[in-house]
Length: 61
Image 1 (cartoon, rainbow, N blue to C red):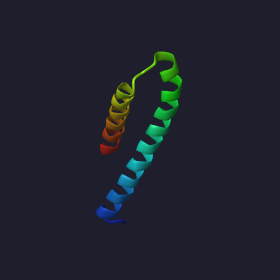
Image 2 (image 1 turned 135 degrees about the horizontal axis):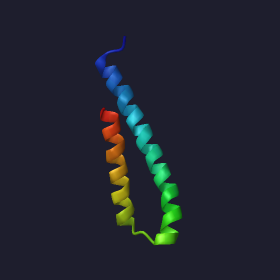
Image 3 (image 1 turned 60 degrees about the horizontal axis):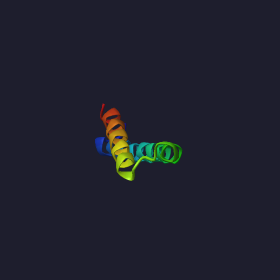
Image 4 (image 1 turned 90 degrees about the horizontal axis):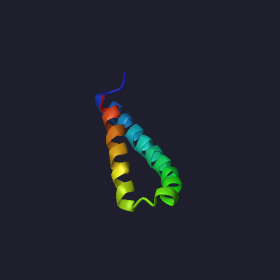
């Protein structure tokens, strides 16, 4: 059985990995939508933050 600290470390590593994937997805999303909708970077930052918050809330459960 692994200690709580070890488990937490695994969990945070997993979180980093998920957030990285989220941002990679957002990168693809950005390329597609910016050309169409001419989204500002600020808008994309807000989307990214919202996505991250969602990912973290999923991980917290």
